[in-house]
Amino acid sequence: MTGLHDTATDMLAARDLIARRGGRPVFAGLSFSLSSGGALRLAGRNGGGKTTLLRILVGLGRAEAGTVEWNGEAVADDCEAHAMRVGWLGHADALKVALTARENLESALRVAGRPTDGVPAALEALGLTRLAELPAGWLSSGQRRRVALARVLASGAPLWLLDEPTVGLDAASVAALEGAIADHRSAGGMVIAATHTALDLGDGADSLDPAAHGGATAGAAA
Image (cartoon, rainbow, N blue to C red; front, side, top):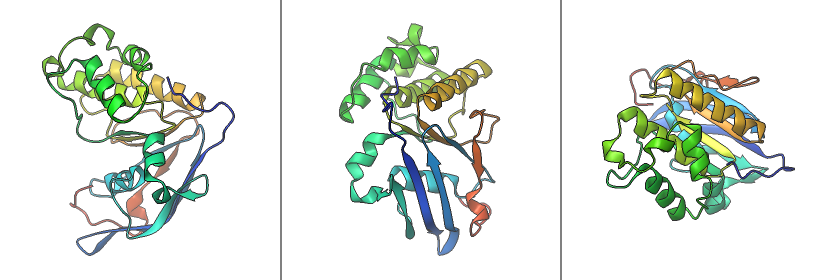
């Protein structure tokens, strides 16, 4: 389901990132690295820059200064290649309500130029097999969130970037997500997640508070 390289050891690195909002620093001098099999929890208060950092890492936002690198090469030098190595989950589930759960996954993967053979396993991993042929508009908010997560699982991307992935999930669904994260990491994948819940990212997971690097203003959007 991951489609990861068996022998490669990949490295994601952020170097001296600076981001501002309204002229004020969200974070400055923020650096970290993450290698194959690693996990990083983005912690801290609301408005502390967690979503800002994730959007920079996925390529949807830009830092004022600093670089994001993959295996020593700036990801901005080949945005298409970076898009293929990222499985992204934002605040919005981004589902088409008229399509079934399965059709949503297959459509999104085809648009991204990815194979669809991982869809059945992703649906099963998150307990969605019996719901696969229901339109997304019929699903509960928690079920739709699981479909959005299944899109990440089925992507084959080595790097998962998850923004509040447990919103709307019950305890059983959180446990299923934790199992999927453990499988992904054991296959050499990486996970970075911003979450306020007790999501277990597994052994050896690090924690980073972006606001501790330059300080985000309280009350600002994350």
